[in-house]
Length: 263
Ligand SMILES: Nc1ncnc2c1ncn2[C@@H]1O[C@H](COP(=O)(O)OP(=O)(O)OP(=O)(O)O)[C@@H](O)[C@H]1O
Image 1 (cartoon, rainbow, N blue to C red):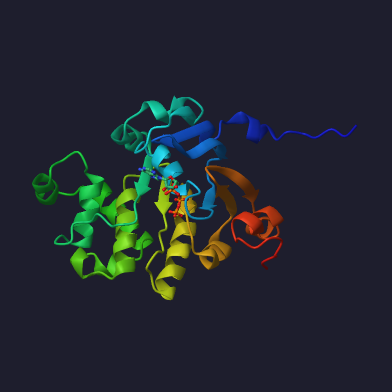
Image 2: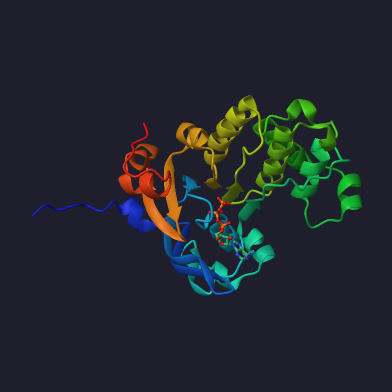
């Protein structure tokens, strides 16, 4: 008999997220149906799958926008997210970016980031309050990270589509969430912006756990580490992009072509 050693490091901590037997119903239709999903701290996980597979609904459950009809969603092994409201989940350290940017177009890039950093203050007091050296350093760090340091004083409304998306990601990051949820972050971007977004994801992943819902398979091929394929409200496969591409079942349900391999 062979003895397989379990890594003590793996046993020592709970997954950052563990979803157990999740079910989400919309008027009796099960958008998520008995889904089990686990995410370790430090992962960059891509969620892919055909239209209607339940990817966005899973992100909605993780950020508290949608409540499950069954199952548990454990954060760090002990907090059941299903029992918390959206704003509480944000405070627990889960940041969600939706597809449409929600930035203040008439404020500068730096002001938008400052607002996000000092969420508890009102708009006016945020803009007139003195920034501490620590806050200035933090602002500078995130401006550099999202590649907008040269545009700190530009109005957010004057940014390109891609830059607006990066600003919004920066506004989430400056709140220093442990888990960042992104829905199609590169949608509508130019090739160059898409490339820069992939690089940004990897830089973010140096410090944060990230889950990305994505349709652009070229983008997934280029930047994914681990991929979860969803189908009909559950997980079909999980693995590296290479594993996924060589899987016949994935080819059948996701690509709609029975048995055809994609290199
Ligand atoms: N609020 C809602 N009310 C009713 N049905 C919904 C609702 N939200 C999602 N659905 C349905 O649940 C299923 C899963 O939707 P979801 O948006 O999670 O899929 P997805 O994998 O993100 O798809 P896509 O890739 O097209 O965005 C779909 O059939 C969708 O029509």
